Image (cartoon, rainbow, N blue to C red):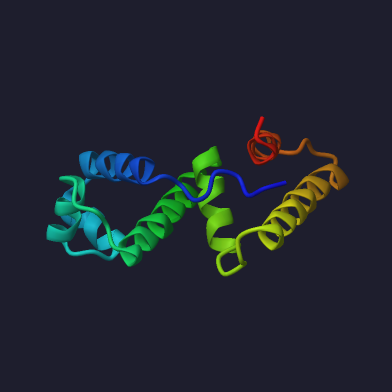
Length: 129
């Protein structure tokens, strides 16, 4: 099993930022992301982000999904990205991801529940199907 698709794509993060700005304001979203409003504006205009900016966007995205109860694939991918950060790419990451998915699946089954659909989708993505 290889790691599924990597972190949430920048386009997905920026789409979420735009949607949040429509609901509130650029300043409020920038504050929530921990960026200056001008930096967020430049990013939305197409400036390439720094690694630290992408990290802040991913963390903000995860917080947003958590608050809203969104367990969509992108939110799950953001959570896994945070949880598995620091594990080297390759076999170590693949094995760790597989173990995490198995643990979550087992917990649901052991408590009489159905595993979330995103587990199967992430496994399919990781298998390259």
